[in-house]
Length: 355
Image (cartoon, rainbow, N blue to C red; front, side, top):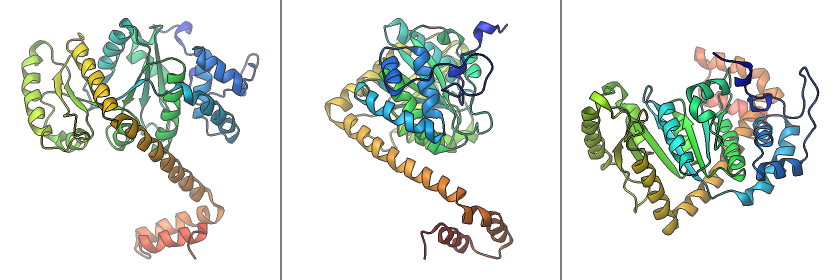
């Protein structure tokens, strides 16, 4: 049964005002850039939570404060294992992540788990939901669980999740696990912000998922058949052989790394130590051949362009002349009175980028 002590501090709730916005009770002291930086670098979780809320905010004032904080903590980032984890519905991501996270903290690591669900445009994600799904890991003193609210925007995934991961790294977390809740375009976005992309699969999931599987497999640095326990262990071994055969036909991201296919059980932890060793082996290989550094450089440039595109689209939609005619243009396109190309040109002309 949930009690008051189980509830997150207001600073841990996505969208909460970091600087003492309207709420009952005394107003909290506002933090300066130096306060945020020193608190983060010292591992102060309360300050880390407030900093994350700050970078998640769409307020211009909050962003003006957040960016200097990020610039100052950047030299203290870059050493963590950044691992993206995805999988088909029902694959057991939460159980897997909790088991892996506990094994990692037992081995001396500090683990931050960030969850991404771009489809959660109304609720913006739920910190209570994520902590309930990983109840043991959520109370581990060496773990930190945080959802990344995206308001339906993939650009939001890019900025908020990337910046949150940087803050967690600066706070001393050396393993960043980014879980994609949905299956779709978010997988590509997350794959472009991590060092290693792990895809969880099920044995006998059905042919109806083949299209989804193909798209995800092309991003994978490793495939793991989860729930390989009990009566399902034999089926998992068959699935492992099938995926191992299929993945050989896909072009690997690195000439020095062939994505392995393993079996594991998030329920009992079987296979997880060997799985993590493969993650570490991948890091050693890509560090030695220079690909990890090059990959991260490409990701930073990609992030920049993603932010440009996201901001341009936001500015375009909110432009007075554009917003005033969008509904009518959409209706004309639907009725076939104007082509999508001409409608787009009209929008861009009103925005001032076409003559």
